[in-house]
Length: 212
Image 1 (cartoon, helix red, strand yellow):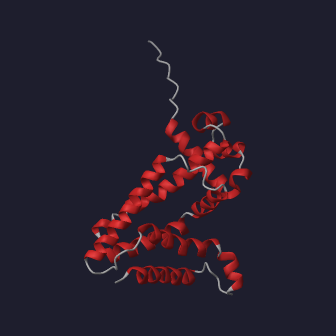
Image 2 (cartoon, helix red, strand yellow):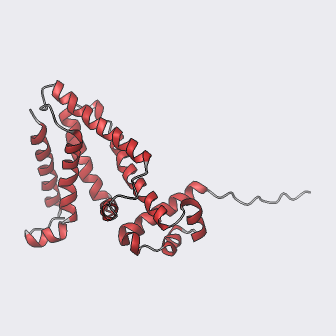
Image 3 (cartoon, rainbow, N blue to C red):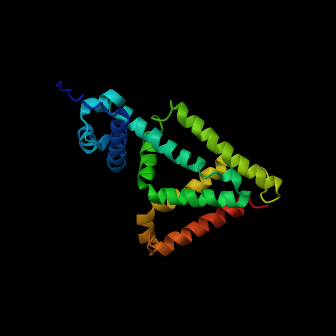
C-alpha cells in the first residue's frame, strides 16, 4: 500500500499580511513611528521580521500601509451606510452619528491621524487608492447636500469638504482633549451621559449649519 505523504500546508499570505497589519496598527497607534519596534510587531503578529520586510519593506513602508488602510477603513465604512437611500436630513444625521461612533469604537484611528500629521502627511502623499476613496466620499456628501437643496431642506452653497472637516473636528477635538477637558471643565468627558450629550450637540451643530 502506497503511503501518500501529506503536503506542507500552503502559507496563507493574506492572513499573514492581515496579522502583520493588525499588530503594526496597534504598535504604531501606541508608540508612533519612532517608538514602534519591528521585533514587537513580528512577535504580536506571530510572524518573523523577514516576512514583514517581504510584504511591506522597511518600518516606514509598514507605517505607510497602516495609515492608508486606517483611512480606507473609515471611507469604506461610510460607503456602507448607503446614505443615498435616506432623506437628506436623516442621511446627514446618520453620518454625524456614524463618525462619532467610529471614533469611539476605533481609538487607534485618532492616534494614527495624529501621527500622520506629525509627519506632515508625507506617508499618504502617493496613495492613489486613498485619493480615490476620498473623492468618492466627498461626492457622497455633495449628493446629500444637493438633494437637501432640491427638497428645500438645506441652504445652497455649502462646501462638502468644509462640512466634513466640521463633522470630523467636533468629534475629534472632544476626544483628543478629553483628559485636559475633564480637568479644566470639571466634568467627566467620557461618562455615558456626557457622550450622549456631546453627540446630540454635534448633530444640532451640523444641522444648524446646513438647514434652510
